[in-house]
Length: 170
Image (cartoon, rainbow, N blue to C red; front, top):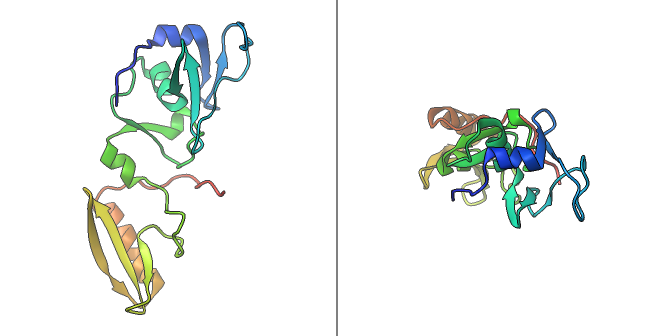
C-alpha cells in the first residue's frame, strides 16, 4: 500500500467520522461542499471514495487514519464483506494474504459455500482451499455436508477469518 500525504490533523480539520455508522461528514462549506453534508461517493464495487485536496482516498483507509492517527500500511479488510460498511468495528488491518482469505464467495458459485464445488465427472462434491496462492484439495465427498465440513475445518486449520456478518445480496 502506498503512503499518504494526508495527516490525521488535516483529515479531522476537513471531516468528522462517526465510528458507529462508518460515515464521514464535511466540516466546512466551500463550492459544492456543505458543512454537515455526507462526504464521499461510490467509486465502484461498493467502495466509498472521498476527495481531499484534489486527491481521492478510500473511506475505509481514512477511517483507519482518523481512529489510529496513522495511515494503514497494509490492507483494510471489511470483516463482513460489505465494502461500503466503514463502521470502525467492521475494519481491521491485514496482509494481502489475510485479506484474500476473507474473500466473498465467487458470483459463479453454485453450491453456496466457498471452496465447495460439484464435480460432474466424479459425481461427487469436491472441497478445496487456496493457501499462499496454492490450491489445496481437501477431498471428494458423496454428501454435501461432508465437503462443507472439510472446507470449514481447513479454514480453521489455516487460520482463515470467520465471516461474522452478512454478505451483500445483489
